[in-house]
Image (cartoon, rainbow, N blue to C red; front, side, top):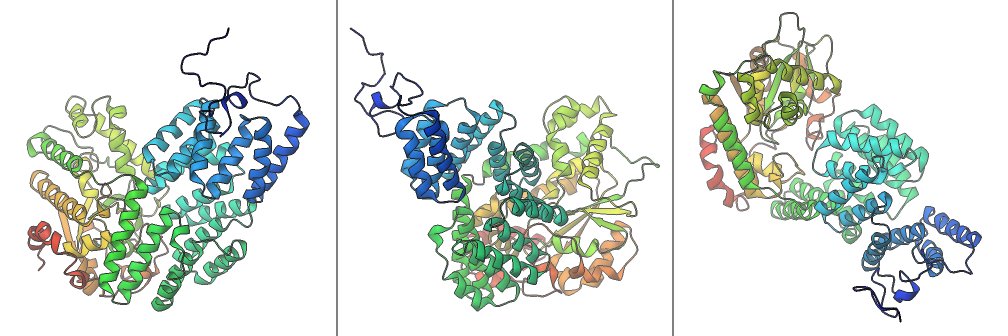
Length: 610
C-alpha cells in the first residue's frame, strides 16, 4: 500500500497552486508537466498561437479563453499561465491573478521570467520592497532579464533616481530591443534629464514598434509641451486619442495644455470628466496635483490645498515609503560631528592645478522650490556659463567613497585623507570624470552651474575636493518654500515634501546644518532672496555675476528664452517673463499652514522675513 508524503495534499483536495482543480488533475499529476496524452504538440502549438495573437491585439477575453484551453490539458504550461496572468491583470481580476501568480511560482521558482512576473505583480499590489527584492532575484538568475531591469528602472524613476533609471532601462532595451514600453520609459527619463533630442529618438523607436501605443504618444506630447511647442503637443495628443480614445490619462495631458494656455475653467471642467478609478496610482496623484493648481489659479485655495494633500497621500501609498525624520536627523548630526574646524584643519584640499583648465563650479544651494531654478536659468544665459541643471556628480562621489578610498562610508571615510593626502585628488578626478560623462561642459565656458536641490548637505565634500567653487544660497520665505514643495511632486529631501510637517522639519534641519557649515568651514556663501530675483532681478543678477567672477551680461535678463530644459515642476514658470504671484503665496493658505508656523518661525526671522 502506498503512503502519502507528509505535507502532500490528498488526491481529491484542491491543488495548492490555486488552479481550482483537484490535486490529482493538476500538480499531483504524475505525468509532469501535466499534459493530457490526447493533447498533441500540434494542438498545443495551435492553441498557444491563438492565445499569443489575441494577447497582442489586446483582446483579453479571447486570449484568456485560448490560454485556458491549453491549461485544461497542460495545467503547468508556463506560457499559457503567463498569458492568462496578464489577461487577469488587464481585466483587473486581481484575486484570480494572485492565484495564477502563486501557481507559476509553485512550478517555476527559479525561472527568471516568472520571478520577474512576480516582481511586477508585487509592484502592482503596492508591495514595493517585495517587488524590488524579486526583481533583483530575477537579475541574479539572468543578468539580461529585460522585465526586471525595466521594473527597477521604473522604480528608480518613481524615487527620482534618474541616473539609476537610465542604466536599468538601457539594459532592459539592450536585452529586448523590440519592447515599445521600455523605449518609451527611456525616452521619458532622457526628457527629464534634459536630453530632448535623444528622448525624441526613443519616442520614435517606441512608435516604430507599436505605432498606436497611446502611452508613448502622450509622454511625447508632455515633452513637446515642455519645449513650448503646443501645436506639436496637440498633434501627438490627437494621435493618442485616435489610438486609444478611452485611455484614462488622455484628459490629464489635455489639462496640462489648457493650463499652459491659462484656460483654467476649461481645465477644471475637463478634470470633472476623468474616471479616477481607471487611473494608475501615479496618474491619480498627478490628477490631484493638477486639479489643485487649477483651483489655486481660480483662487479656490481651500479646495486646492485639499487636492495637494490627496495627491501626496496617494503618492505615499503608491511608493510604499515615507520620510524618516529620525534617519535624517542622525545623518545631519553625523555631518556636524565630522565637519568641524579642528577636523578640517587636518585634511588636505584638492586645489586645482594651474594647467588643469577646468571651469569654475558654481553651486546653487537651496531647498526645493526656493528659487534656484530661476537663478540657474538666468545665469546660464551668460555666454561664459554653462548649465548643468541637477547634477548627481557629488552624490556619485559620495556613494563611491568606500571603493575609492578603501575605507568607511561618507563622511567618516574622509578621515583616510589625513594619512593619504593624495587621495583627495582621486576624489577630485572622480568628480570631474563623472561630470564629463554627463556631457554638459562647453570648451568655451569659464563657469558651470550645479543646482541640485539640497546641495548644501554636501558642503563639506565640496570644500575638500572643489575648494575653488563659488557658493550661492537662494532663499525664499520659508512658508512659501514649504507650501510650494508640498504642492508639487517633489522627491528630493528624502521624500519629506509628501507631508507638510515633514517638509517644514526637513527645511529646519537643512538650515541648521547650513548654519553649522557657515560657522565651521572657511567658505564664502552669497545669500540671494528669491523675492529680490523677481522684483529687482537686474541688480541681484549683477551681484551674483560679480560674486562668481564673470562680467555682467544683459543676456541674463532673458532667462525665459533659455532653451535649456529645467528638470522638475519649475519649467512652466521659467518659460514666461517674471511675475509676482508666487511671492507671499502662503498668505492664501493661512489656516492650512498654522501647524507649521511654530516649526518655521525661528528661520522666518533669521532669514529676514515677516
